[in-house]
Length: 82
Image 1 (tube, one colour):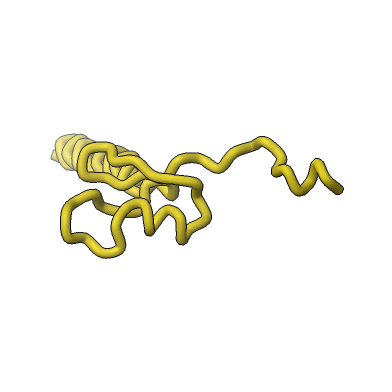
Image 2 (tube, one colour):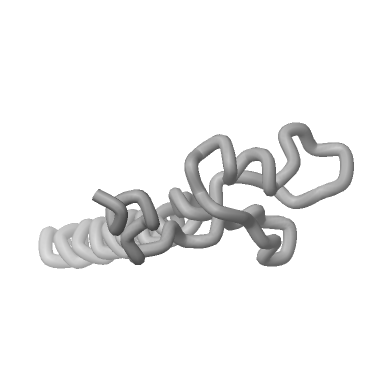
């Protein structure tokens, strides 16, 4: 009887750990700092305004998710003049 109880406890703990691991991976995909908003008519601020206020050069919609275009890695023209 004792081995049956240990086996059941092991299975339950394994299932809980599996759900915790897969749940944390799913949450990691939900938040993306380059995709901070929602694309939908009537949402304020709109996607382009949101991304430009965060310092990104532009935006695009990936489904209903507002994503900001990556910042350019090229040096700006001002640094060339200095």
